[in-house]
Image 1 (cartoon, rainbow, N blue to C red):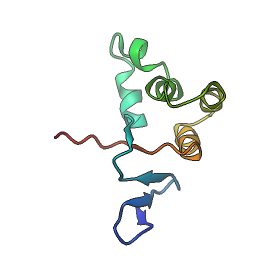
Image 2 (spheres, rainbow, N blue to C red; image 1 turned 90 degrees about the vertical axis):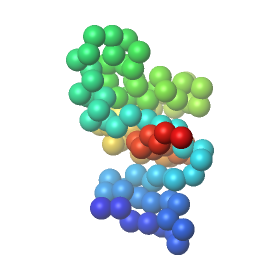
Image 3 (cartoon, helix red, strand yellow; image 1 turned 90 degrees about the horizontal axis):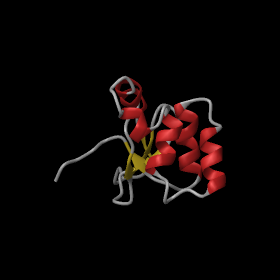
Image 4 (tube, rainbow, N blue to C red; image 1 turned 135 degrees about the vertical axis):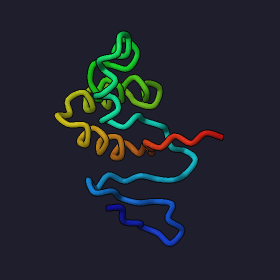
Length: 99
């Protein structure tokens, strides 16, 4: 279930109360389930991390400071890590649109 927070449907909160923005400042993050499914491919974890929290730190390396990275790595679940990203003011999406 998705609930919209404004009339233009630019912002919404999903079932896990994770805020997402449809604005152009979003950063694409692979869906946690996709990351888990791809970990068995040779070389995948070398580039994308052994777990989703490490993946987030790799992708957002230039946007996170050292303490924020530690906070993400300390998360026990993927949803907890995604909520942390929101608390840092970082907008993300799991949808990749090709131009």
